[in-house]
Image (cartoon, rainbow, N blue to C red; front, side, top):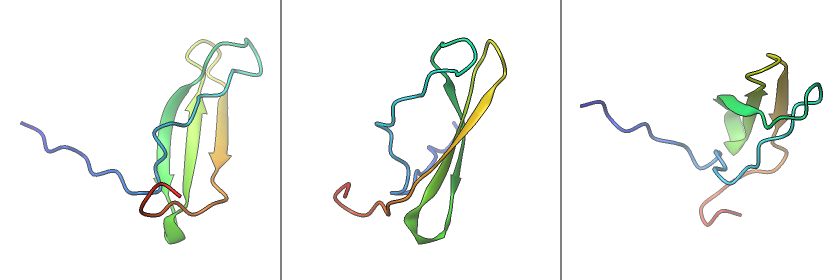
Length: 66
């Protein structure tokens, strides 16, 4: 068995994937980079066009989802 990955509090699993600016299809979450201070960067990729989009969090996520 593989260990269950531990997601830090900075990962917001309720984030809605953006639509591809090229074809309009929903993009898939490709990478999550946890940064210092409880912030994270989310990279989305279109499976059809291979277009990528980066979303950078501006708010700190803490206990209680705030």
